[in-house]
Image 1 (tube, rainbow, N blue to C red):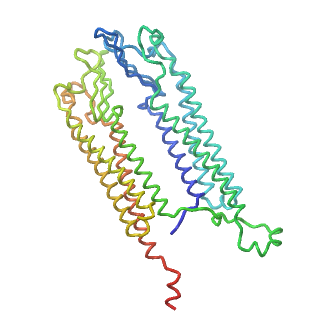
Image 2 (cartoon, rainbow, N blue to C red):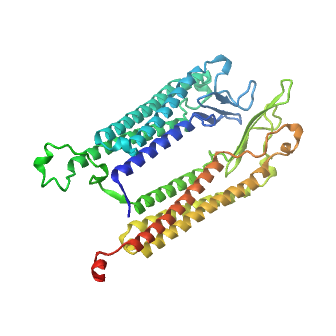
Length: 453
């Protein structure tokens, strides 16, 4: 069977880490990604409760509080009394890090895969070290972004935070965007380390490699320079089926993690955040979302600032949410079973000695992963059919100027992504089975040639 050298495996891992880091870092620039999030209820006793709902990203901030609001309390200083220009710095740092990440990725692949560059070990190592240094710089820029953000994000908080009598929560309240940026920086650093490890392995393997003719031509080699053939290095390698096995197992784990995350109450499946301008300075806002457990509508009866999005809970049936939750939980369970079967069949000697048994395990894992993906697709279809059932009748009245009913959000897309990963894992397992069958048919025992003679 074909195999990938240890050097190439580390190369692909490093390249994958850079791509993931670039994607994650780019995602933190989205206006929908919160970097600070305050969602609290402050109980002052005697039934007097004030709520706070506010967040900020790298572009702006949002505070649900309006002047003379009797339900919500102020979180941020109004925009006209503060300076938001500081947000430009973290945006530029992230954009620069993303650019450096792409440059590092290109240098790594060009230096490692283009024959004109990788023929000589010194040049190959120079490319990889260059990529490593650039990845290190990208990670450093993201760390600088985090430090800068932590120093400045509290500058727009209301002075009410400073008075203990207000019973405000702690100022330190960072959210998803901050943690994703930290994760991206770790990936950049990991890629840099892997590249350096790869260089060290390459240097050691070249020193340890001995050509067959060296024992007979030691004196001749002292005066003759020879070109090093990189593919001939004596490196450990993983067979193609094992590489595919690791990829398939990784896809299942990621799919299980992503699908599980969609069950969190903080993950929105539908999100309405609009301002409806009726003219003459009359504006109504809508802020509402739902997940797989419940829904939230900021509108209250008699509200003159916000307009109604959902039918009140006492006049609707929310039992339909149980079905998508069960479908996702079942898919997660099947994913875990598929992962265990795949590893047991492929790595435990008692199961993988015979190709038939090994293939049976892999086919079973593939079928289970396919079922898990199918359940997630069923969940998406079911959700799309039911989530609009709780929308207010105002959506049907053109005079209300409401936005389109079709307004799905992060949870839906994450579930779709998880289903794709399950299907991809299933396909890779089948490909692995086909490779194993073909290789077993093509293999010829050493004794066969003598027996025919």
